[in-house]
Length: 230
Image (cartoon, rainbow, N blue to C red; front, side, top):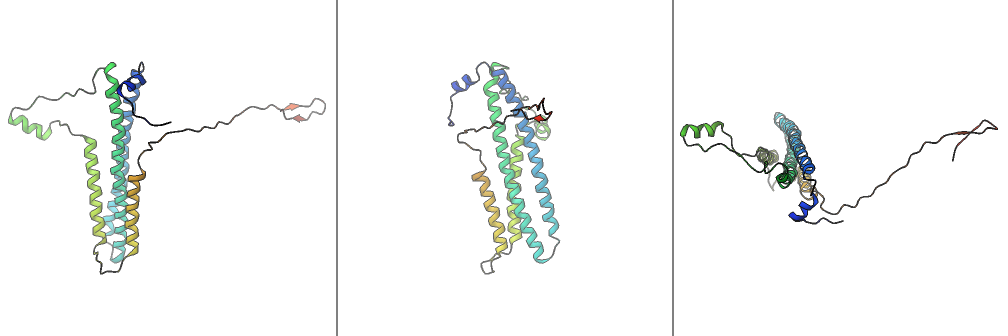
């Protein structure tokens, strides 16, 4: 089996006569992906918030303990925040995948409902413009705002890592513990990029099935002993 691109004609042929069922599934899975998106965001906010709180708390420690814990926590913060950035992008990819399916399937079922966007009238008065600026609706993507926040948090952790490692100088003896922590952080983030993408090759499935049966014991009429049936 191979993965091939298909044309719009091939797409329409694949769902011909099943557009309604396919559209219902696409809408349901899109809704499910959106729910998962925000559940994942809550998951990462919890870990990142706890890590940041720990980072702030250890600043009250003295000497090398403070610096050691700061480096460890900033490493955790970097890994969590970078994974959050990538998870946001992955979630957005699959959400848009099902939205595109809805775009392709809805015309014959509901009409272009999902593709038509209705908006307010344009503001002509100064008061209306000010009101719109303060409380009006706007074509802002909530998920994109969340993605930008995740990038901000990731960059912030880089600054906190630099703050934790300071002072840095070639004249100072190397701290191999810090070098190992930074290297591990970079390697982990690199693996997210190069090994965290979805598999795009062919899928050849293997299946096994076990059997089950009911066995009835037989009784020998002469001896009265049980005999296992073949």
